[in-house]
Length: 105
Ligand code: FES
Image (cartoon, rainbow, N blue to C red; front, side):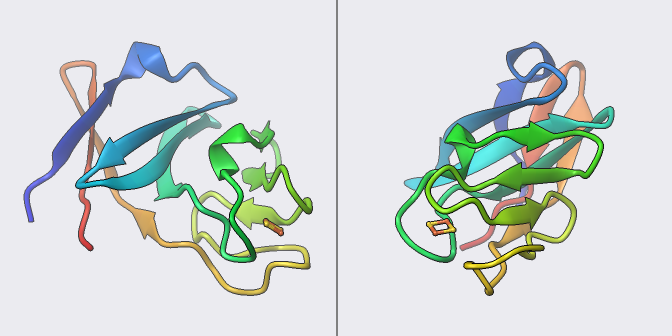
Protein backbone atom coordinates (compact mmCIF):
# COMPACT_ATOMS: atom_id res chain seq x y z
CA UNK A 1 0.00 0.00 0.00
CA UNK A 2 1.30 3.46 -0.82
CA UNK A 3 1.85 6.06 1.89
CA UNK A 4 -1.09 8.33 2.69
CA UNK A 5 -0.55 12.03 3.42
CA UNK A 6 -2.00 12.75 6.85
CA UNK A 7 -0.76 16.18 7.97
CA UNK A 8 1.93 18.81 7.66
CA UNK A 9 4.91 18.75 10.01
CA UNK A 10 3.71 22.15 11.30
CA UNK A 11 0.36 20.63 12.34
CA UNK A 12 2.03 18.47 15.00
CA UNK A 13 4.38 20.45 17.28
CA UNK A 14 6.94 18.63 19.43
CA UNK A 15 5.27 17.00 22.44
CA UNK A 16 1.80 16.95 20.89
CA UNK A 17 -0.66 14.50 19.37
CA UNK A 18 -2.89 15.05 16.35
CA UNK A 19 -5.66 12.71 15.22
CA UNK A 20 -6.42 12.05 11.56
CA UNK A 21 -8.79 9.86 9.58
CA UNK A 22 -7.31 7.33 7.18
CA UNK A 23 -9.73 5.09 5.28
CA UNK A 24 -12.37 5.72 7.94
CA UNK A 25 -9.96 4.72 10.69
CA UNK A 26 -8.68 7.19 13.30
CA UNK A 27 -4.93 7.32 13.79
CA UNK A 28 -2.99 9.50 16.19
CA UNK A 29 0.18 11.17 14.96
CA UNK A 30 2.61 12.00 17.74
CA UNK A 31 5.71 14.22 17.62
CA UNK A 32 8.16 13.32 20.36
CA UNK A 33 11.91 13.42 20.71
CA UNK A 34 12.24 14.99 17.26
CA UNK A 35 10.50 12.09 15.50
CA UNK A 36 6.96 11.28 14.38
CA UNK A 37 4.95 8.19 15.29
CA UNK A 38 1.56 6.88 14.17
CA UNK A 39 -0.62 4.61 16.30
CA UNK A 40 -4.22 3.48 16.34
CA UNK A 41 -6.12 6.16 18.21
CA UNK A 42 -8.49 3.85 20.07
CA UNK A 43 -7.05 2.42 23.27
CA UNK A 44 -6.74 -1.38 23.32
CA UNK A 45 -8.45 -1.50 26.74
CA UNK A 46 -11.72 0.37 26.15
CA UNK A 47 -13.16 3.07 23.95
CA UNK A 48 -10.87 6.00 24.68
CA UNK A 49 -9.02 8.34 22.34
CA UNK A 50 -5.26 8.19 22.88
CA UNK A 51 -4.99 11.45 20.96
CA UNK A 52 -6.53 13.20 23.96
CA UNK A 53 -3.82 11.85 26.24
CA UNK A 54 -0.55 13.33 27.44
CA UNK A 55 2.60 12.85 25.37
CA UNK A 56 5.81 12.23 27.33
CA UNK A 57 8.80 13.01 25.09
CA UNK A 58 11.28 11.73 27.70
CA UNK A 59 9.62 8.35 28.20
CA UNK A 60 8.40 8.20 24.59
CA UNK A 61 4.86 7.33 25.63
CA UNK A 62 1.31 8.55 25.28
CA UNK A 63 -1.06 8.16 28.22
CA UNK A 64 -4.59 6.88 27.80
CA UNK A 65 -6.86 9.66 29.14
CA UNK A 66 -9.41 7.19 30.56
CA UNK A 67 -7.48 4.78 32.82
CA UNK A 68 -3.91 5.99 32.44
CA UNK A 69 -2.08 3.17 30.65
CA UNK A 70 1.14 4.40 29.08
CA UNK A 71 1.71 3.22 25.51
CA UNK A 72 5.12 3.10 23.86
CA UNK A 73 5.19 5.38 20.83
CA UNK A 74 7.69 3.08 19.14
CA UNK A 75 6.00 -0.29 19.61
CA UNK A 76 2.40 0.51 20.60
CA UNK A 77 2.78 -1.81 23.60
CA UNK A 78 1.35 -0.72 26.94
CA UNK A 79 3.98 -0.20 29.62
CA UNK A 80 1.43 -0.03 32.42
CA UNK A 81 -1.92 -1.65 33.23
CA UNK A 82 -4.85 -1.86 32.85
CA UNK A 83 -4.28 -2.14 29.08
CA UNK A 84 -2.28 -5.27 28.22
CA UNK A 85 -2.65 -5.52 24.45
CA UNK A 86 -0.73 -3.30 22.02
CA UNK A 87 -2.24 -0.81 19.63
CA UNK A 88 -1.12 -1.00 16.00
CA UNK A 89 1.69 1.28 14.85
CA UNK A 90 2.41 2.53 11.33
CA UNK A 91 5.61 3.84 9.75
CA UNK A 92 5.73 7.60 9.22
CA UNK A 93 7.78 9.31 6.52
CA UNK A 94 8.37 13.01 5.88
CA UNK A 95 8.56 14.54 2.43
CA UNK A 96 8.71 18.29 1.75
CA UNK A 97 7.30 19.12 5.17
CA UNK A 98 4.39 16.67 4.82
CA UNK A 99 3.77 13.57 6.91
CA UNK A 100 2.85 10.27 5.29
CA UNK A 101 1.69 7.09 6.99
CA UNK A 102 2.05 3.57 5.62
CA UNK A 103 -1.45 2.52 6.55
CA UNK A 104 -2.85 -0.96 6.10
CA UNK A 105 -6.12 -2.31 7.48
S1 FES B 1 -9.41 2.80 28.07
FE1 FES B 1 -7.28 3.10 27.91
S2 FES B 1 -6.48 2.21 29.73
FE2 FES B 1 -8.62 1.89 29.86
